[in-house]
Length: 274
Image (cartoon, rainbow, N blue to C red; front, side, top):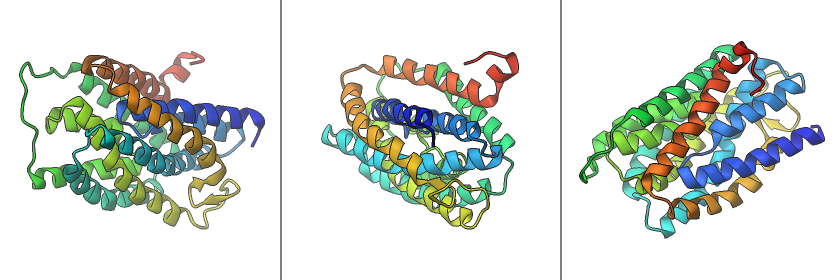
């Protein structure tokens, strides 16, 4: 790994950790494009690069989510009962999602990753906030139903699930934003475990892997991302409780739009170096 790659990944860990703690995301929407750029820049085939980025990002999500969830727990902003049901069901389907990914084309995965981010951003931006307080959904069976798509999407795209989970918790389950952020991080702890296991098991023995990899999980990249990420997740979590709901929504959607367009290939098609 080149010094430039080390700097890029370490810096990405700082940004992803802060965004994760502040917005309730695992940070994969930042880490995956950065890793993909580094891996393809070293000559790794596109197919292997995107799958390794997915698998490694999910392993980074685990300690980052633990760190962020703990901070939100101390602020009493985690609905643990919901997190356990959604995360437990999501764990199983995240493993299945990771297994599906290992049999798909890297080009398709890259574009689909961008599209899924864009759809989430559009839904979040256009949704109307209730003008009066609505009680959150607390039915267990509804939580379990949502665990299926959340787990599958997280496993397929290597994203802890935050970019989909926040809209679901806020818009479908009617959680307040601060509770949605903390609960999302708690759910990601379980979902990332299932996804990581899927990427490791299905990547064993695959040729052209990067050195020091467990399946589709690259350990050197993981270290460069997770150390700064876990630290900055604490800073981000503290920051989130000092901001009102509306700015959080705007920050969330702007970041999603940029990364979605980038991974979908629009900037590349237009010839823009963004």
